[in-house]
Structures are given as C-alpha cells and as structure tokens.
Image 1 (cartoon, helix red, strand yellow):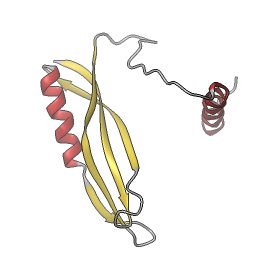
Image 2 (cartoon, rainbow, N blue to C red; image 1 turned 30 degrees about the horizontal axis):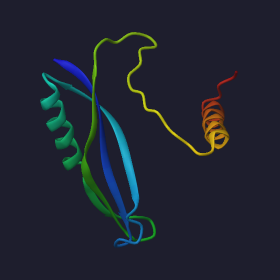
Image 3 (cartoon, helix red, strand yellow; image 1 turned 120 degrees about the horizontal axis):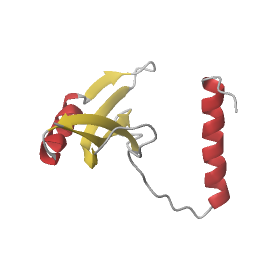
Length: 115
C-alpha cells in the first residue's frame, strides 16, 4: 500500500444560490494500492461528505462535492520532506509577500510561537 496526498474540492452554496462562488479545497491523505484506487477512494470520501444544513441565521447551506483535483504520491516520509508544491503568480508581488507574512504572524500568535 502507498500513501497519496489528494485535493478534493467542494462548492459551498449559502442561501439558495446567493453565494455560490465559494469553494473549499481539502488536502486528504489516502492509503491505496494504486493512483487509480486513491482517486476513487478520495472521490468516495468527497461524495460521502456532501451535506445540507441550516446555519445559525437559518439560511440553507449546501456543501456539494465537485471532484478530485490533484493526486500526489508520497514516496518517503522523513522530517522536512516536501509533500506538495504550487507556484503562484501575482501582479502584486509585495501584496502576496505581505499576505504570507501576515498569515505566519497569525499562526505565531495563535500558537504562541516565538521567533
């Protein structure tokens, strides 16, 4: 059996289609014998986690599974091993850098990390 990192994507629909442009991308670890098995296992997880409910404002919320967007085989587990990588292009490099630094500061504050 092998380990795979998969990305499953949901569309979040709040209030009967009023906010249908919100998506949730989830990275999931899947143990499977092949890439094909990992794909179908991730797809099954996504379909099984579709849900409709009422939020605190009594608005209808629907999480609709879109599909499996990525599969990455994980070859070897070791400290500091790269699991996944993505490249971002931005017209505003400084804004992106500031965004990343802000996220790091929030993590430090939430987890009381000290640099």
